[in-house]
Length: 265
Length: 347
Image (cartoon, rainbow over all chains, first blue to last red; front, side):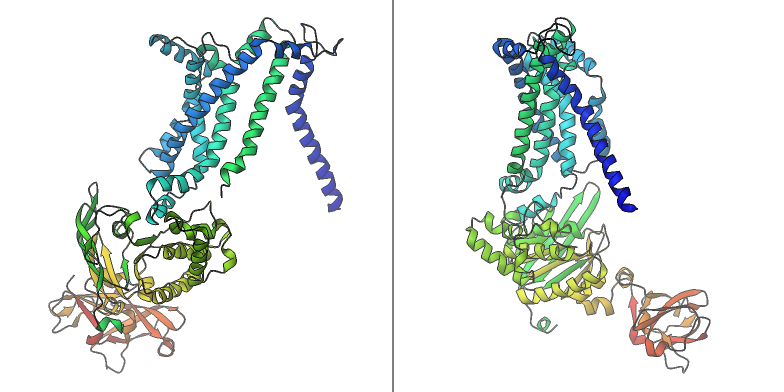
């Protein structure tokens, strides 16, 4: 009785898993399919299957340039936001002050602020300062939006961090620098890895802020958006697939490196 | 108790140390002398400043004024990492991302001791605190509360400190295990011969382990003495009341006000009587006698506690099981206590 119930439940559960996976991967699969056509209109099934779009994407300077711009922004965002967020998260874990809880909520507010409005506001601000927008200003704008999120991600890993560990290490004869290297950094490391991943992905895929703040430079999502809207060709899905593969590779690499950071000695 | 007769050389002394946090004077003009090899316990309720005091002694906080001498040498400005002392924290503060061995070896690693020597030293320390060798490679997060306690002790001992500080390390542990660890702590003190300075809010815990106890209240030490002295000769109502229930009588116009009986030759304004000194006095052999009704009885194992009503005043008495037989709630009779068992108090 219970045995048959259990097996029925198992079948249902695997079916549910299958549905979820399908929902997640069908859009990606359809993008891959679209990139294999040679027509200017999205239509299926294809009359002619072709890899021309990939050849074109890999052959043109634009593709490399788009990726380079997005990558530069994302890397800058990762480095700066992780540094700022680490100190912010440590301050949270280490000091208890009036309004600490309130600040924890306030720090997240910019996340709920509509991104295009944030982008426009930052553009006006930059213009007022006389700064010509390019990929660097876009990186700055991303940082404004990403830092609170990364701070939250790193803080979560530090909620159970006993700050007395640092005092204990100091009391056991460690110098301030040794305390940081032996105690603080290992405690922060898992949060830093997760935070860096978040920062990278949020910056890499961001459109609303980049549109306003990247100036003459074009990021990958910007180019994809404008070419899908106005001048579509299979080149667009082909570039998207290359971009997806590239970012997936980076995420997988980071995940593979994670144990190296977290289980040191 | 035997050592107390021959004075031991002092190891740590403080002279008028004070520390304030804003308006609050957490530690107020504290001077203590601690003897080499002594188990010295500072007892106080939460907020009495005892944790701040021990942090100052350990070098984790700086006093606003006053100085600290270690074997006569001023160490007030020496930070914790340069003092030959070590603290066991309330949270234990074990390095959670490391193994038992790595925790214990930490101080040696900071000194640059080679790996093999470190390991040998750590295993020796584990033996001292009775932690099995196979725990060496285990992550500390996989140890039980009692085992973590031992790891923290071994880690502190491994730095070979002259003085070990303890900031309520047993407060988060359940009653039975705490009783076992109290005995182990006392045993460890005897075997290592080191000076232990222990902080707790439990006078009961202090009584079990300490050579001497200091009672702290609102930043000052109000009484220092052996457990026996603290128990038998409290100098204030605060100290008398700190160790469980006591009976306190007010002396006015040569009478015990609550009982309305004569109290000749008692000059002090208060008289304290511990529950175990109140007894039935039907045969009239007690120095002070009064009539009381038994309102409740509580079995405490080897003793029984009685709540008494003496003309509207609630009193508490404790009798050994034999003497308690036959006394039940509702009984009215003569109760009393002797002059020698009553402690006069000025405050």
